[in-house]
Image 1 (tube, rainbow, N blue to C red):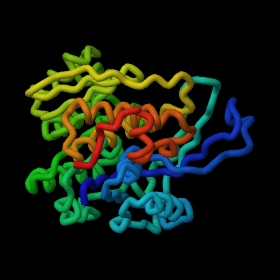
Image 2 (cartoon, helix red, strand yellow):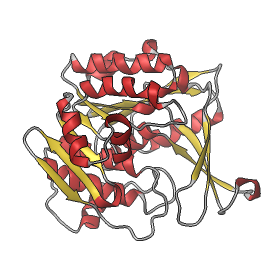
Image 3 (tube, helix red, strand yellow):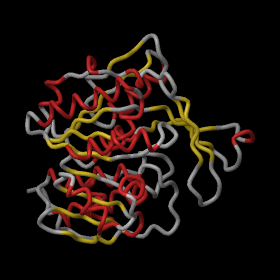
Image 4 (tube, rainbow, N blue to C red):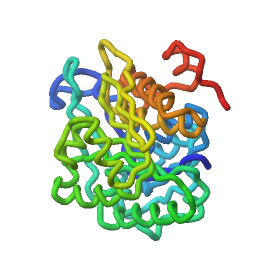
Length: 315
């Protein structure tokens, strides 16, 4: 297994019309979840990926499992819980602005994930463990599971990839900051946004963010800058890598997950940091071309055509 990740996925209801939800009567059904987004994006890019979670023993849980399995992701470690429901979310859309998102996830099956639910041998089998701050925020038991997974990975030379993904609807910054900072100290590859740098370090300057997290122990920091691209920093180099302009994005949700997947794909293919960042920028940009959280993630051939270059070859 190249990458293993875990966290909550929910059924997403996307409105078929713009405007307040009280006037919307038809929705398209899909799935949403930062970790499963990354898993799906990596699978489409040609990698062997595993994702697991706890799902309700209900039709929504079965739907999530079927969709993710259908994308070529290993879901053999999923646990179903007959006592709890699968989480849901609804989007509310207005023209050319990011949608409002309404979550119905309290006491969901995934929020009860615990250390006992981890298959440690499965985590040991990976080259990279990808985690996000969302799972840390779900519950105390989920938080303990994340730290146990990190401990297992680090003791078995598995790289730790971490996207802080701070969700203030799930927890306040005073609670979130010390927990996230503790994980950052153990991360090998970090994917903060400028807003998260401001929340955690008190600065939105990408260079200060990169250097600050490197000083905490990270090996690679890729600061997401939206349409401007990204800033990458390691102990050996730093670089500002231009992004790809999308004039009228359909949906920006999932772009950060696509970015993380693209970067990890580059690392797994032994690209240098700049090449990995270029791939990450392209996958993130392509994610915004399609309505939905994961529908826009490209295959490796598609992203090469989008970038208009042929330097990315398997090595």
